[in-house]
Length: 131
Image (cartoon, rainbow, N blue to C red; front, side, top):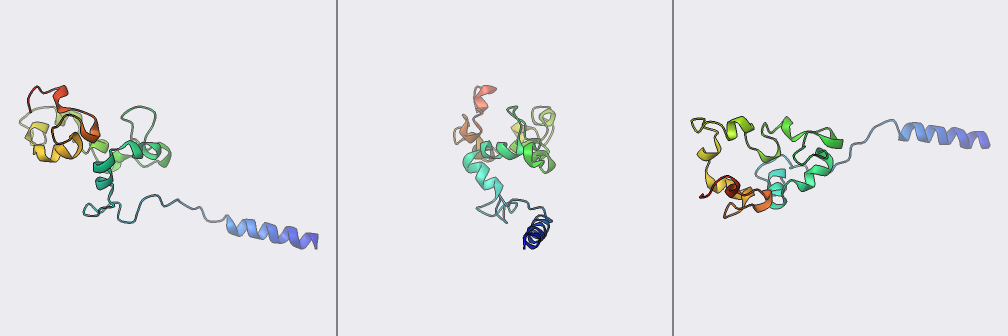
């Protein structure tokens, strides 16, 4: 009887642990920009602070994968902000992707209606006297 119990336990453990599971944290429509459950909608509402625990490191702007191994930079060249690379974003005004060439209404999603911080907690007034 004891051998049968041990054998059953071994079989149970082997079959129960043969497939690695991955936790489902995000909803299925997480990557659908038109969904209210999309990561873009959640970031617009709450910022990126909730992303940091799985996708970030200890540095303030580190979203290079963290414990999840999935970096924001894999899909967003500018990282979690969605901005282009810094050298383009603040580089030459002749570049179409220069931040001054962007529609300010889009900026308000993260920097607030008056562009003084919003959920990004970065005011455009840090560099600009007038907007």
